[in-house]
Image (cartoon, rainbow, N blue to C red; front, side, top):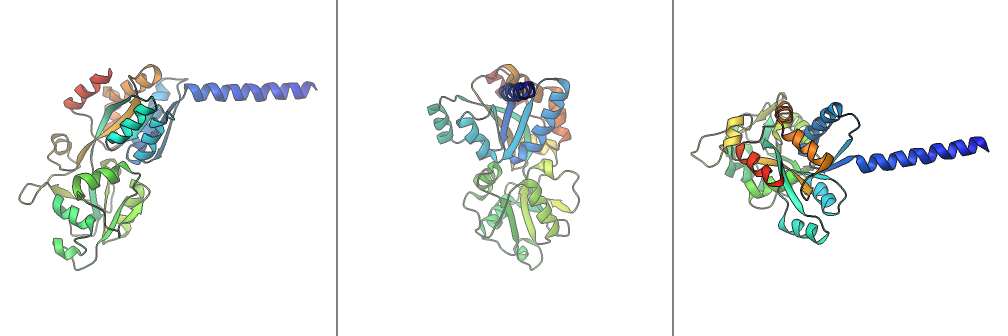
Length: 290
């Protein structure tokens, strides 16, 4: 009987601990583009703050946004803006959405390292991914079919690239991959391939061409690897990387966001291959008390 009592006490203690830990843990869900960066930020934050816990999971921006709308996470990672209908749905659920910008991304268009294609205009890229250009010879390459690699529809990168560059629908022949890393590996193995990924996934990666892109024919080409080109907007596929929260950040959530935006946090952003936020977004974040 004594052993049974002890066992029950241990089980109850463990269950209580799990419940407390779950309540105290910051839950972050969403963007595949942001997951590696936010995991690194979380690991370093927890090392500096013993007893604080953060869980970071992916699934795409849509997954994170849905979790925030349904009050299932503290922070939603999103590589796109929330849609007005999503903000309205959140409000109906009692969730007051606030946006924080934590990094800048030069969304990178990549080809195989053996491809002679090193630069394209935004219009050419749009035509390629819409399926209007299907042979590399049409953009100065060899006479070979183009293989498309992109993301699935729950991805914020899928939405951003479609809206900013395609301004239409993706080709039905595009291979829809689960994440940035899968696109990188597919293009590395396919000399006819072209894909798009967050810049943090291509820095120091061999076997790829990271294309320079011109906003229009006749304009100068810019690189997503250049901090100045991305921050200034000269690179035409630049975008802010966002985190969404419910209401004005407070407590542990606010402390973590402040760490991400601190000089130390922004240095980690650079080390992970992305770019620190410029002054305009520093001012923007002040609107939510950060």
